Length: 235
Image (cartoon, rainbow, N blue to C red; front, side, top):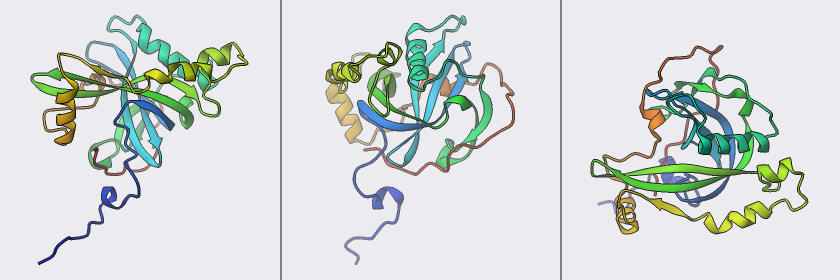
């Protein structure tokens, strides 16, 4: 009888810890390309297809750019604006239709992308958020900000040509490990849920990806960004 059977699955042979982003912190990432989605209500959100330590993954960060009525969403639009400044851009063109390997088991999926921001290196700050819906724990990765890759400069420091670049990063460091708990969810409940393997009935995606687009834009010719996403097991 075999004592232990070897596995050749990617998650079992990968050296070191998982590169999957699943905790609060600041991560050096390459934004392969941002995606744009429109909810049933009409709000517009930007999510990020990124690569971190060699692993490609979607970050549904709740960057809501406009509200249902078309007015700017102050929080999401501000963070997205900071990304443009850090990327050295004054504006981005309308999204184009493209294919990304973000479907089930890495299948190609047609989405709308912002080509101008493709292949952008940044530090991305993520804050985990936990709540409940119909009795199930829900997990979100909320994008809280960006810093320039080469020196961790903030958008404000770049615009003001500050001689104290990095001071904003240092000022925010004490918040990097923050976690948000909503709907009376406790840290103990979340710890047990994660230990149990994030059981069924839960989701880590933002609502913008769960709802169909209000209308299907037809921007340009389909392109493909990135390769098949690695299969991983979140810990």
